[in-house]
Amino acid sequence: MKFFEGRAMTTYTFFISTEPYKFEVTDSLIELSKAILKKGNQINGFFFFGSGVYNLKGGISTGATIRNLPEKLQDFALENKIPLSGCSTWVSLTGLKESEFIEGATEEGLGDLSNWSVKSDKIIVFGTGG
Image (cartoon, rainbow, N blue to C red; front, side, top):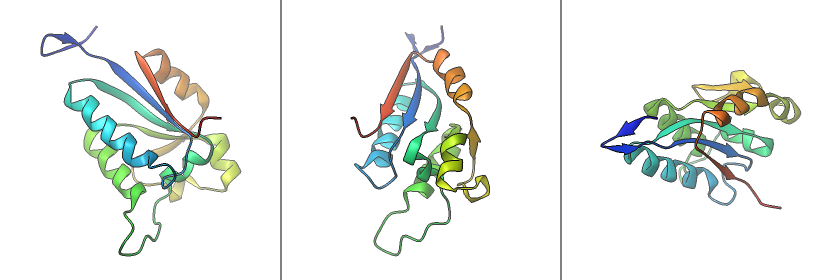
């Protein structure tokens, strides 16, 4: 068990299955992650599934009035050394190419999510519900 300032550290993995501009998921993901890291906890990674893989698409045109959430996600993940992975099946189904991804993002299978999950104390899911 790892400790930070005398208390046990919690390890998290995030599972995101919603597009970047729907339900404010990407902003919520980043803000919650900031709070988690500020308390000395660890994040194993962000895994994007279903339409959530669109969070990884770089080079989008947002104009002057809309914030570029994939770029915001990229900057946060790089600054905090958090891995970003998109489900390889969903990347293929959506027609995205890894070469279009934001910097630092990769295409991985569910096995990678499984590896992160077994090393996590908590898994947080951002999705539409059902």
